[in-house]
Image (cartoon, rainbow, N blue to C red; front, side, top):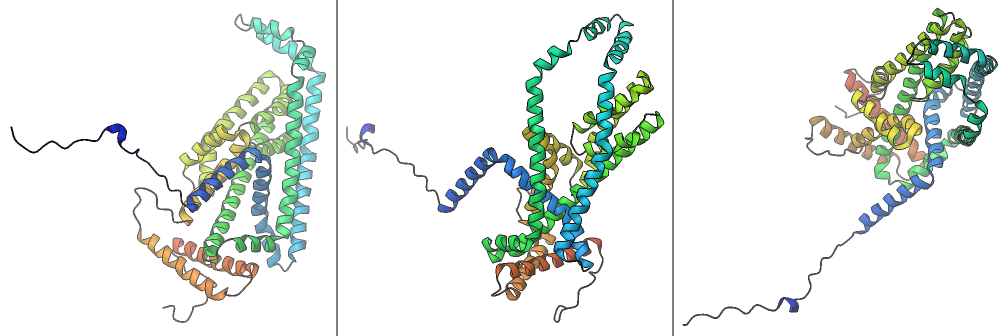
Length: 418
């Protein structure tokens, strides 16, 4: 039998091992190191980051007032001092009106505790289902309860002191950041390539808008809460209605737990009018909290931050699950900032087609960068930053005017612009 011989296959054991190489570029290495450093910073310096974020939010909230005073020919240093003095005075006045009333309510409860407990036990005795609860209520030993909860009270006191210290630190940091605005802005623009200065200016302007919208939303919801509590307590004839309403509006800044901190003084004050009035106040305040968290917050913040109501609701859930009360406070501005960065950095999302307005926006960005490069050539970083902010502000006005279908006011026609 003839034919070509079969090719001889080499032994598998004699084959050279297959080598898989992963080439990691220098850029990818820096990105990985940056992500790891960011995670480490969040884990180990969360308190410092919270102080910084709070200070930045205070700066964003107070900057429009300072700018308004500067337009009235008041020097920036005096304008900043005036804003902080007025803000401190308002906060002190609010605390002076509310805290003594809350303390008086607590003292009244402590003094009348045996009578209140016996009255509640009498109501519970009227039903066979709640009679065992009445017996347990009469047998409560406050000394043992205080011993078992001493550590929890100490921990809560330490957290409250820590939060107060962080708040004061954020206020002072915001004050110095506003005083050193030009130098800080120059340092920031010095480390960023000049080709990105216009985009950086737009991002900072949008962040200021986001913070302003968030503060306005907070003020609106707090005012609604204070107004509701005031009307409710006045209708029910509850004493100290104004002070309790102001306290409730202040506590509404705290998501989820603010209403429960307000319910205590309000229900205790209403108990002087009888248990039925106290129960009515409790149920109506609880119902309003549900209305606020489920309806008002998504609508108000969705309009102020230009976020869909579903995104507002989901962001609050995610923020609370990840970082508790602090996460709930920062969830909405962070969500708005994230969407703004996607838009400003021109990130092309999967499945999204390029629109004609996107092309026009990129051309406007290119023109702005060319204009900035011509005007800021050879200037130091702080002076160049001022020009970048001016150009970004003009672009923002043009976008707003285009969205409203109105001509931009205050701008002169440039030669050759037609």
